[in-house]
Each structure stands twice: as C-alpha cells, then as structure tokens.
Image 1 (cartoon, rainbow, N blue to C red):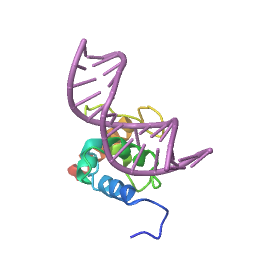
Image 2 (image 1 turned 90 degrees about the horizontal axis):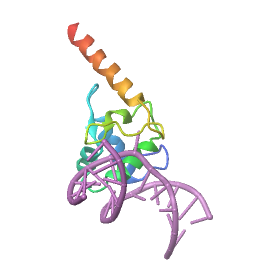
Image 3 (image 1 turned 135 degrees about the horizontal axis):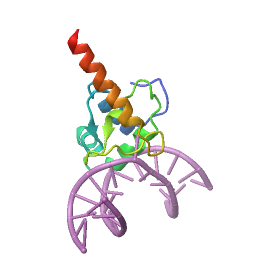
Image 4 (image 1 turned 45 degrees about the vertical axis):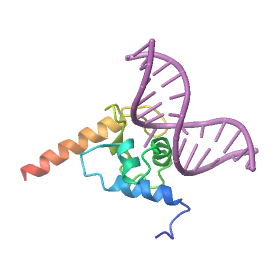
Length: 98
DNA sequence: TGTCCGCGGGTGT
DNA sequence: ACACCCGCGGACA
C-alpha cells in the first residue's frame, strides 16, 4: 500500500484515520489513537500529524485536543486550525442550503 | 487554570 | 543502541 514515501505502518494508520474525519467536523488525538488500536499513543499521533507529509490531502487541522482546545498547527500554536474549521463549517452550512 | 508525569513512536547521533 | 523530542491526556492542587 505504498510506493509513495517512507512512512511507517503507524504513520499510515494515523493518516488514514484522519482522512475519515468528515468535512467540518473534528476529532481528538485520543480518538485517532483509539481508532488505530493504540489508545495510549496519543503523543505519537501528534508527532505523526505534525510530520504530515500530505497536508493538502490530510485534514490534520480536524484533529484537536480532547479538552476542546486546538493544540498546535504547523509546528506552533496558532489560530489557523480554528479558522480552517470555521471555514469548513460555514461551507457545510452553505452546501446544505443548496 | 496551571503543573506534572506517563505514554508510544519518530528521528538524530 | 541510546537519548532526546513531541501539535497529548489525565490527575491532582
């Protein structure tokens, strides 16, 4: 399942799980960790997403902390995730009206 | 709220 | 092989 780049099994599991998060919705790092059967690996999940090799195809901004805060993005703490999510939600709302 | 420690996995040396 | 790093989480004060 991979002629692409050198990614570990773990990475693939994390990235795959992340792509299943619907547009405009969010999941926690813990959710991803549980999803791939490693509920304790939340920090590793964070690292995997940070090193996200395909930012355009993998909505890593939909993964936030389980306490509702946004965590980091692009290697720092910014409001980028918040903005992207607000955009997605507004898009979803618009789509529903069509 | 703010700190502190445990956790699994990746990367550099 | 080893040490150090991390976009977290849960407990506790």
